[in-house]
Length: 210
Image 1 (tube, helix red, strand yellow):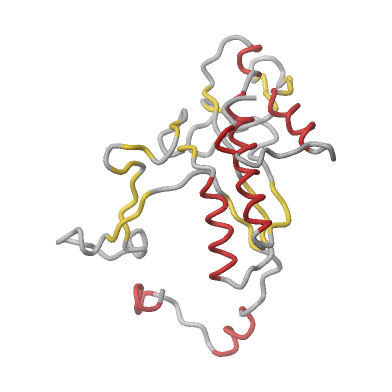
Image 2: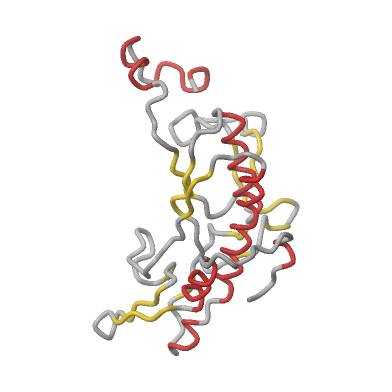
């Protein structure tokens, strides 16, 4: 970071460095999707340095016309479950395996369904969480210190960029009827998942629907 950002990076005193070093209790990781990355410096003759380009990469959602994963209702979220395993293992190698909590992981529904029964039938969300948990289990068994997993989200809510036009919740909120709440199929699946006798499929690529 020092070599890339240079004098735009604030400098810590020796005392500040001592206070910060090793001060975290755990690392919170939000994971939804992934990107292809390539070196931006060697692919641009007019590279401009700023906080948004300090990583020196171009990020894309497809390579040779092939998307990185299954598309969803919003353009930035492609389903790439193996990425959560790769990320957890990278953190394990790079940062001496700190305690990790997956603080957000989830998938979107559109808000276009006019029938409640259709809105509650979120089988793609079940597939998404099952597969991500399967790959996360691989990382744990390989030694990554993952201690918790939070699905985003418990309730449909106001998304910071999209408002009420999309839904991430495992519980459906009827915005037009006094905020009535209905459990989606994914909520019932999570209830089953939390039982002791639930078994995660060992080959998550085989899970197509639930």
